[in-house]
Each structure stands twice: as C-alpha cells, then as structure tokens.
Image 1 (cartoon, rainbow, N blue to C red):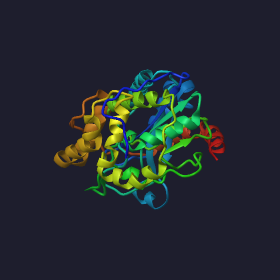
Image 2: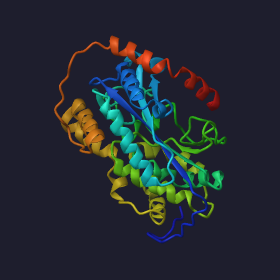
Image 3: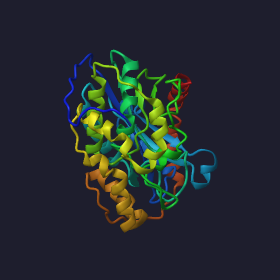
Image 4: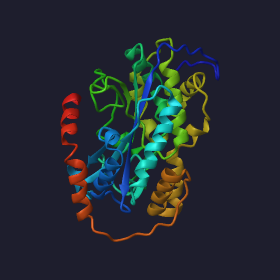
Length: 343
C-alpha cells in the first residue's frame, strides 16, 4: 500500500469550524458485575444538573441470551459541543468528575467485561464531528485512517477470562461492524448519524486514559480540516478488520500510521503499546478485581494502579426502584423521540 514518506508535512487548511462531541459509555460494577443500582447513580447525576444531564446521559440494558449474566449494561455521559478538540476532552474530564461524585460502585471503562462473553454488553467512546463543509469528504477521510484511529483507545483484551487480543468488543459487538454501502446504517464503525446529522466514529473502545482520547481528538480534528479527498478504501479496512481486532497495529497499516503522523503529532507508543496491553498486564498480575480497581482509580484520579476496595453486600432492590422512578421514567419522552429520529 502506498503511503507518504515518514513524517512528511502536509498542509492543514481550516475549511470551516468543525464541532466535536464525545459520548462515553462505562460499566459500573458492584464489584464484578453491573447492577440496576446504576440507574440510581444516573438519577443522582440527573438531580445534580437536570438541564444538562437530561439529554447528556443514558443507560443501556443487556439483550437476548446475554441476559443470563444480568440485565444492566453500561451507562453513558456525553459532553457539550465544542469547537476545539482539547476543549471537548476537558469537558469530558468534568463529566467524569460528576459521574464519579455520585457513584460508589467501580467505574470500569473497558470495551467488554473481562470474565464473561456478552456481545450485547459493551462500552464505547463515540466521537461526533459536525458543522464541516463536506460531510462526505470527512466520512471518506476518516475511513481512510480508520485502521489506525481505532487503536488510540482499543481496550477489550478478554472474553470469559481468557485473552482474546486487542478488542473482543470490536470483534463481537452487535453495535458496530464492517463498513457497508449505506453510510447511515447505524451499527457500523463510522456512520452519518440520522439523529444528530454528524459524522459519528463508533469503533473506539471505552478507555480510562484521557491522554489517549486527547490525541485521538487532535488527529480527528486534523482529518476534519484536510483540504483533499483521500481514498476511503473501505474494502481494505473490511478485509483487515478481524486482524486488527486481534493484533492491533499490523504491518499492512504501518504506512497509514506514518501518513497520519504527517497530519497530527502523537507518540507512536500509544499505538504500539495499547490500553488493551496495559489492562491485560494488570489483569494477569492482579486478577479481575485488581484490574477493575485500577480502571476505577484511573477514571477517578488519573492513576492506573490497583487500589484496595471494600466489598459490601448491599440490597439492590431499593436503589433500583429509586433509579427507575428518578431516572428511567422521567426520560421516557426523550427515549421515544430519540428512537424515532434514529430509525
């Protein structure tokens, strides 16, 4: 595959003022599995800032055969709309602090829980890009770099307690998939969002590391300001996708890495030693709760190290009822409108 010479400069000409938004999904475990107590935390978050979190938070339930492992999946927070990639990551940090302040469970930002096999039970970072001069150009140019962009936060190394590779979520989740002919079909790796009219990058796993997310947003911003049409080469991406899920950065995509680094500066080590690699190392040495406590510690405090946790046996019934009454029911009109817009 032809690529640019390493580190060759390329002009970035701002054609408009792209706007950015981030939707972040995370599990809240008690301590190993999510529970309906997550709805109680969302109710507290909504009460903290009703005007903002009525439309900037959400919940997910497990589906189908995965229900045997529990009803609750992840929760979601989203940022304000920002015109600067660093500003939107700064806003995400504030949203994380709000969620952490109302949550006593372990906040686990990972693509797929480590000890089970539940393809409908996954968490992601979705990046929305809007107000660009040419949405089709942006979509195609993101596709061009997609084999590398997904690696910034790739973070799903396990299934059923066994090592899978870089992302079991990317491999198995129903909510994403190979690129199709229609760019508005919802469950693929990058789409035109019918509801928000943005280009939505859906492939990225949930990740604790704000530094990785910051470099991802800077790279996306540089791509959004490119004054040229790149070959989307979706056939290449679809052909390599399963290999990327297993191995991350592969020889076939290294020229793309050099090409992307001609647009946006970032440490190559972010992609050669991924978040998935870091998480698996902690799991291998500290076990499941050690890994989840490290993820929680990093999400709350920016320190990816296990911490001591006290496991308390508490009833889930009362918090679940309060969560349904204080969060789920008040937001039913929003769910209905959102569902109609996404059809």
